[in-house]
Image (tube, rainbow, N blue to C red; front, side):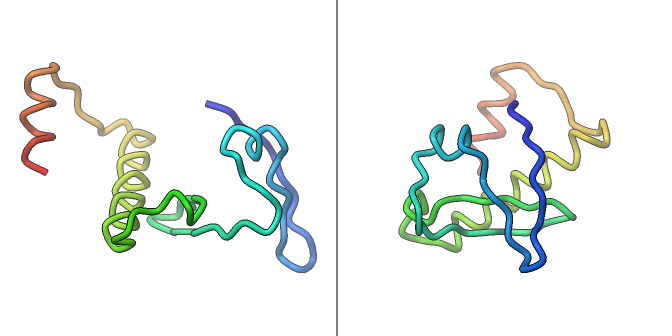
Length: 90
């Protein structure tokens, strides 16, 4: 996991660090989607969104919820077979 500290300007802006821009191929003027769920923010380039944006936003929210559960220590562990079975139910 890569962590950077950014400062918010008086206009509510921040600079996305160069290491993140390079890693994700983000160019000047590119549009991004920002989703909030349970106090977490998820930022993603619009060009990476699927055709059905509702599905994509749902998945981003689920990822934020899952991270919250991990931070609380309430995530569950399971073997590969059980994980794949649960995944196929989605």
